[in-house]
Structures are given as structure tokens and as C-alpha cells.
Length: 297
Figure 1 (cartoon, rainbow, N blue to C red):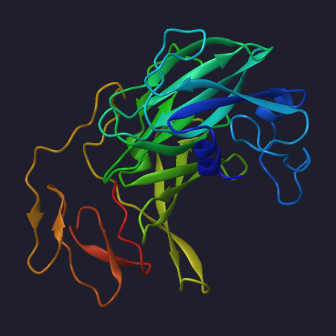
Figure 2 (cartoon, rainbow, N blue to C red; figure 1 turned 90 degrees about the vertical axis):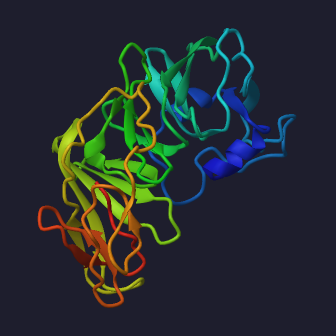
């Protein structure tokens, strides 16, 4: 069952928690692998409309704009991408809020017996936080699914202010997947003709600096595959995520015969029938794979 199917099944704008003899292991299980489910086939839908394997049960723990069960914390609107983290003998569930403005992310902390210990905000002042991904060091990357959106690194345990990781690029972010073996983070773009990126941190575990690259493929289905570096854009310093980046006050500029580009961008140059991406100091553009709108930094 995919993420969106689960969200739909948990009743509109709600959140669900699963419990039972297998839940403790499932909450922090290894990444999914191809093949039959290790938990067995799903049974008939329960009272919440969710089909679960034997040994599992479900309960609704929150509904948007209403307090999370056992707390005074009002759950956010449009819950979307989420993940569970181990936390002592219990766990923490993190969920994004896919609204604009306001977005952000919230967390629910569970005790070992599945009871709710607390609920709280871990990211505020952002826009349309859709998907993201967990890091091996226990943070949640919450991605803005808006034009020139950012990736925010949040701290599910609480007590630490979320950080806007500008080095990971500005585009309509969707998911982020960490590869601890290669020490890279793969990023997807939520556009019909979007790009596939990877971010190579200068220091693994520190996302404040690194190299952002975009996949360049020979064709849509075959041919050589290479990675092209996405140039830096000056002035993209880190800032606390509690401050919304907000819309730019600058006026968009247009290069002769080309589409409108964000203020401060170099003019576009048409290069055959290929798509284009920005080069750094030379203020020129280079061709990128067909169907890719061009990475932004």
C-alpha cells in the first residue's frame, strides 16, 4: 500500500496509529524489499477502513484542527509525507502539512505501550511541505513542493530549531532518499518534466554544504547516464526555518525571446531543441536532458 493510499484510508485530514504484536518491530523496520510482505496478506477492512495483516489493529489519533488524543496540540491541515523514528523505548511519528501558507511539520511521541506521550510542532513558516525523507542520523528532511522551494532539516526529538538547507537546491521538491553507502542524497522534483538530482554533502551528516548534481541521460529509456553539477547561486545562506522565506520582492526579468526568469538569473540562451540550465559566472546556459526544466540553486 503506497503512502497516499494510507493517507486516504485514514479518513480525510486525519492521522492513524497502528498497534498490535508486530507494530514495535514494524515501526523501525528495515527499508522495504521486493517480494511478499513479511507480515502476511491484508485482511478485511476494519472500522477505520484499513486492511491490515493478522496481529495489527488501527486507531485514529488525530484529525486536522482538533487536538491529538491525550494532548492539547491541534493537528495540522493536509497531513502528507511522514515517517517513524525510534525514541528510547517508544517512537516518534512525523508528518508534513501540505498547505500554503503555513505548511511545516508536526510530531507525535508514543510510549512503548503505544500510548501518546506528547504532540508538537517541529517546523513552521514554510509552504506546502509534501514529502521528504529520513536521514541516518535521525533527522527528517521536509520538502517544499512549490516553485523554488527549499529542503528543511527538522529534529523529531524536539529542542532544536529546524534548518533551511539551501545547498540542496531550490526547485519544486518532492522526496529525498539518503544512501549511506555512497553518502549521497537523491532528490526528486514534482514536475511533469522534472529532474532527478543527487546532493553530495561535503561532510556526511552535515547538509550545510556540498555539491548538487542533476542526472543527464542519453534518452528517456536508454543511453549513457552522467551527472552534471548544478552551479551555486551566491547569497543562499542558511537561515532558521521558523522564518518563512516568503515571495521574492524582486521583479522578474525577461531575456529577449526567452521565458520569464527569476530576478537575478542570467539570461537564457536557446540551444537547439534541448532544455536549458544555468551556468555560474559566465551568465550562460547549457543544454540538459530532454524533459528537464533545468536545475536551480
